[in-house]
Length: 290
Image: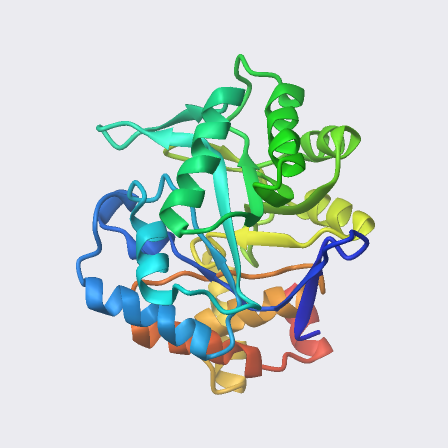
């Protein structure tokens, strides 16, 4: 499948091409501050959209506000078919740590900030990033999100960093459109990162498939085990492709409900990633990769 539909059974479905772009790497070191090469960052965004990418993932805590401002500078006024997805629920401290920002009033502040920095009246898709067990119950967080959806500030609400239990709880509370979790060929379980645990795994993917929810994998090129790397390298040689392209192609073949968003701060790597759409893995390749 070359496209995927967000909220297919809603009054406002969004169909996008099935290879998006994640902007996190456009910031400076540690996902903080301005890019080292601002002209290249802007060119990456323009090239992605000109090449058919119409799903871009961002967050106002990237930078902070850096990726949103780059998106607006590079792409505004936005094409009619461009879907910009952002995240709320976290913020950054001056020491670059990641902390929850998920009280209802904080979520409203984040949405207003995203609307302002992106230059939009409505964000088409917003993921509520869960930051572990904290003092703000999920129903309060999602309640604020659904209130803003009713106000027209958000078109669709999604969840990020969720366990299967989190996702099922969210679905009981209201219309969840998408999930954004760590997921890749080599990372299909929970992993610990410097800013906390990132749930992953096939269990979440199976729930997404059951409910027709696109799963948007982040850090899809980050992790690999030596034996898996060897297999990827073999398949890459067979298809005259790079290992990164095989990793992306594996996601596209593994499930029609996966919407990869590989990010990069290199224009050359962007073009390499986009070319992964042409890598046709066979059933034998998928079985061998496992």
